[in-house]
Length: 473
Image 1 (tube, rainbow, N blue to C red):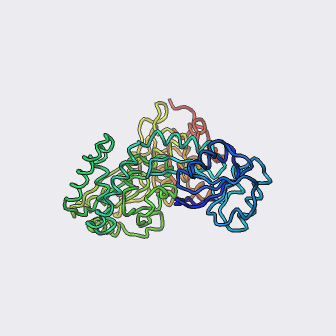
Image 2 (cartoon, rainbow, N blue to C red):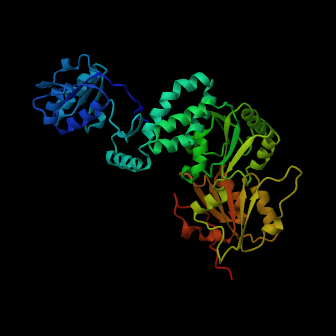
Image 3 (cartoon, rainbow, N blue to C red):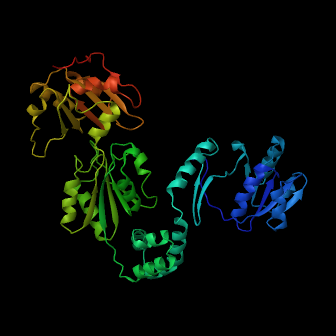
């Protein structure tokens, strides 16, 4: 992050603008809207500057820049069409440890002007740090169409109640739950319809109601890794949670989207590193919910497909704890799609099985015979450590040794890696390529389509012994 986003209170603060033309005019308008006290130095001025001076909004200094003009100023903007003058302003300001903005010269900017979406008192600032201002401006235009105009009046209304809420409801979590309740109520509809007195009465009535902390658990599927595969509901609940209890399989990019001030608890499930036992994870969820917290139980993929979501919900039900389940894109679907492998295909596979590479605690083996049927795709989760056993059992059960296999590491992520081979070489290829978790195994004739349908990321690595599969008849 090249610049730290800050909102600065400039009311009555002295700001110097060097330049009196159209570029300086745009900056001046923004600064005046923030209440700054403007000092503008230039040999000549645009007519608007003259008007502002007559209205007492700006003090014009006819002449040229000199370093002593920086005395007592909070900020300085170099906005002339003369690079040497702009450079002199930058050097003088930097020597005094002053923040300076040099228009259209990003290396000479100690601060920058973002694109602004104004729903006062809600302000959204967007910046590309000067690298792509047109892109930032287009993004602002899109957001302008998404954000309703009533956001400003709504923020003003709740702002008037803030002290009352703080006086009546103790604790940050309880107050946050109250405000979530408000924003999900008809108060918002009243403001949108410009029925502000009615909205205020409704908000007062909500505050008068008994306030109870009600814990709840959101069991949310985070998908296989690409944050753009998150559902809208998943993102909403991630932003509402007081606590996020997550697994290693949740990608760092997705973790960046949780509420900034939420408590984060990693229960760290990955191959060879079960840092928190399942019963302990269950108890964490129970304890937090009984304390009145909103918990997002964030799981890679889908919580009900090898995610143990059902077990955790059974534990919650035993304590009458409210919960929601948000499905996610399971790894089989996401990784296969990003690898260019259709899990079913009229010519190659009429069925698909999702299987875990882990045996049950009692040692019961999967039904290898059912997985060995031709024209069927088998997707194996968590299969790296058992790859040699999987390979041996499938071949012993009758699956052809030449059956195509794809090993997908970090599927759907920018670092996605695909290795295609055949069943008889599965374990050797995992060792040779030093494949790391998270990884998924896809076994079946559909893998032969991968080279043709691949679209995302780097081209796959194909072992020299992998043979293309002729169309099955």
